[in-house]
Length: 356
Image (tube, rainbow, N blue to C red; front, top):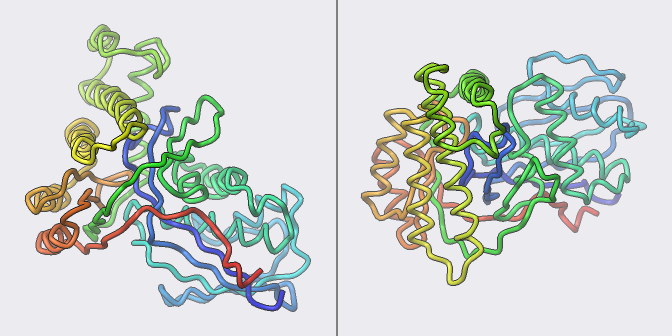
């Protein structure tokens, strides 16, 4: 390899189906043009050297399997461990530089983009054919980020980052993610800069929803609002509220899927559905915050067609769909206390051709 190998993976926004993937329900995502980039090459010894200038960190470790984790979410090591179990064992270490512009811990999948990029990088370095298979990369990355550390999250982020574009993902059917060829305009991402506790929020929402589903005695695909009313006396008020919102969001995702496969595409209806989704996340799942609510209201008043909180919630980012007034919406979000990024749908993980 004459030049360093370079790979890039995008962050994502969840258009519809927030908090639905771990229930086995479909989601609609969009990769965004904020990305993690890894550049590097095979080393001369057994050391893995990681230079992360954006967060002013540098670390190294010996490539001795199985690698022991030195922190709760030691993703660089977990990917190596997962790949080694798949028979992908590097003969030498690597030297890499990691850069990115995805807001960290903000609901835009910065960690998943990192794991997807790192997985693809190592597969390519090992001349493994899966380096060009987005589904394989996504599944390996999910194992390394979620399964390996017994986290409660789903696979949505990894598929969104690996495949890119606007994507309809059905996890229960086994079907491949379906690209949606939709002429989406500009979004504005707003980072509240409020830290969030993804693990505890996922545990609360997932746990409450699953218990309500259990009491209903039907699968999440079959349960109706009438079924929910029949078990209202058997579950807590919070569990009822959670599952009611999950069922409403299930329906919104179905409607959005139909809309996004229709021509001509109705941008106003798309924005309206996004805002209806936000209302369920705010009032039913209780994952918004007063600051994010203010940012969303400011975006709507500035001309956004729709807006919602993004990710697990409790802080982090929101986004607004603003194909015609993205600059005005960005300015309104800043005035409301957020950091704004005008973003567009982007492609999935890819290698820089000049590095191959």
